[in-house]
Image (cartoon, rainbow, N blue to C red; front, side, top):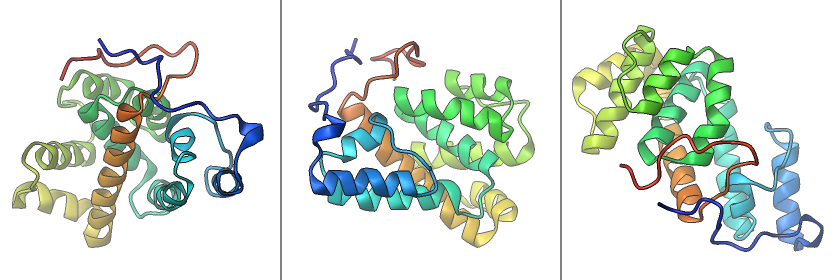
Length: 193
């Protein structure tokens, strides 16, 4: 079982950041997120602030400025977090998904790795698209056309961008063992794939 409480990167002191690290923290705080937290991917990005600035800008755009509704965006993020068993990502985005309108039963199904049978048809279409893409690294015409009908061409491109960005975030969180906030239970068993 992996030790989630032993991050692989040194925890940085918020009061002793370099100029580049402070600029990244300020950029995150002044962007669409409206705050900077010394946790999760942003704490990791501080160790490579030039990369972190590019990543957080892309993430800010994909999370807040696409034509994909917040409900479907958060739904796709949860599908990605479940695929990667990204503890921190799931813990942060499950409440956001529910607030955006994803039903608790659907969230439980995704967490358990089950197809959400009672989800609205647009969520089912996104689920099929995501699962097919992650399983085969391709999307067939059936899944593609269903999502394109819902999101349009631009929205479909943006959906793939959301999936790619949050896959990168998941890999980052998992590789560097981002700790969960105090009091948050790990949503996935470690070692189980």
